[in-house]
Length: 368
Image (tube, rainbow, N blue to C red; front, side, top):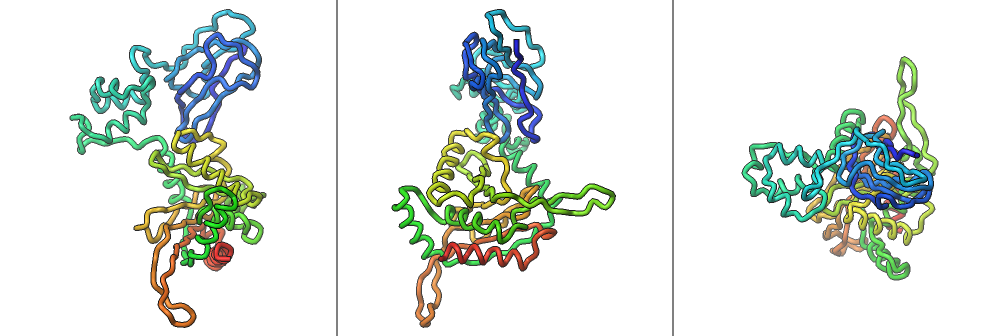
């Protein structure tokens, strides 16, 4: 009999939520078959069967699990599994309420009728947080604190660590985006894919990996008494791109983006936006980035200073197009479309001159 144990899925969480069994209790499974889905603060992860056999669940949907917990057994017969006592399962009377969700319900005194009215089989902490945000409950007054959603807590941890450890600087350039926007429209028709400034920017950034290796490097503190700073070059440009569709900020990664065509970049970004809508990101989608492109689509945002993620040296920001009047080479007044392209950088590794050169190189590629 083989135990199915919860692995360590990331360094941000101490526990995970069992959100779905993909195989029925008592069903035959083959080695490599996905059998269960666990949710972390950043993504959903499938666990697979390690051997052929019969799956016997040890916990129910909605359980809160920690690394090392036994959640199922796979045997070659129909014998019942041993009883697992180290996983906290929620009640199955009515909707399943996870332990973090129940703690929040108790803390804020949420009416059980409002929980049942959600019409969900599994009530997670995020569901209760959303309910509290809508108000209408006497216990959720403005005088009480409200916890951040799990995704935002992960963002908060990264921001805090970034500001504590990275002496960041920032510079920005203005880009005449009219020609690039027109070119993107043509390319979209040719490729039958949605290509815009974001896709052009990702492609341009990735193409400069060889010319500006420090912008993609990983800062590391050398071993020894001095603890001197060193860098670890990256073998390929793995470009993270911010995705926010109203359910929290995610930064999925396009690995080896220099080898991707504009059509492939557009397809991957479209797939990532779909995953964000469904909350279906996996840890592998979000890991491994060595530079970040942050997208700011609100037309009222003129300038955005991104954070440099720990383990990286640079983060770019692309703001929404703006319209302005300017003088052309003949002195005539013309209307043009511009965008602001910013770069936050770890000043220990990248100097201001190199940052400006990097931005101008990106600008020339996009405007070409």
